[in-house]
Picture (tube, each protein chain N blue to C red):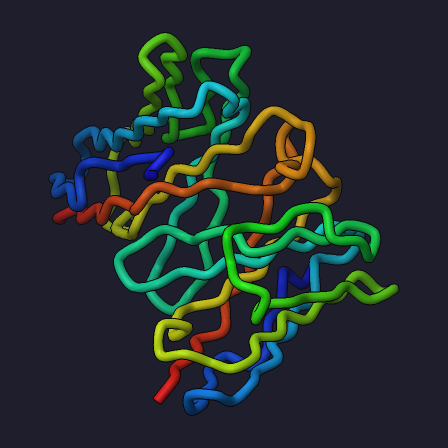
Amino acid sequence: DAGVTQSPTHLIKTRGQHVTLRCSPISGHKSVSWYQQVLGQGPQFIFQYYEKEERGRGNFPDRFSARQFPNYSSELNVNALLLGDSALYLCASSLFLMTGADQPQHFGDGTRLSIL
Amino acid sequence: DQQVKQNSPSLSVQEGRISILNCDYTNSMFDYFLWYKKYPAEGPTFLISISSIKDKNEDGRFTVFLNKSAKHLSLHIVPSQPGDSAVYFCAASPYAGGTSYGKLTFGQGTILTVHP
């Protein structure tokens, strides 16, 4: 079975541009979460979507937005890119809304975003 | 405010010996704990988890111990193998409720190197 897939794998943008990152969850998974991982740190929670609704938001500015589609795939959008947005963006999927009870989140390989 | 801390940036172990990775947390609302392994250029891979109602969970060579009173968990790998060399992250999920359903809070990671 296919795991979580993310596209593109790498992306180079300049300051002020916007970017759209895409994620396809594991088949049957209805929850998608987005994380940002900067070098030397652990992933940091950005958003969770479940059944096409936002169910959680981390401490990120309004330049970050996301949505989930009827097929449970998801997009992360970042506007007015800053140098500090350079990071690995990870998508994770899980069966249910809650993490726990032997329902871990499974991660894709991420999109490496570089801002020049 | 670092709610999940992995105070050892790196650990070096001989093949066949035990690897012990440690993690401390401060938020008493954390209810479910997970360990992930990450290779370069790949996303985090789920290893093992534990609910706060347990103090130990075992899966093959991997055992996670939870000490709730000390707000401390550890991952034991026995015996360690060179293929275990990777970055290990502990993560915590809060008790279900509010807008924190799928929010994993990660530590900074520990680089494990297993020498042949």
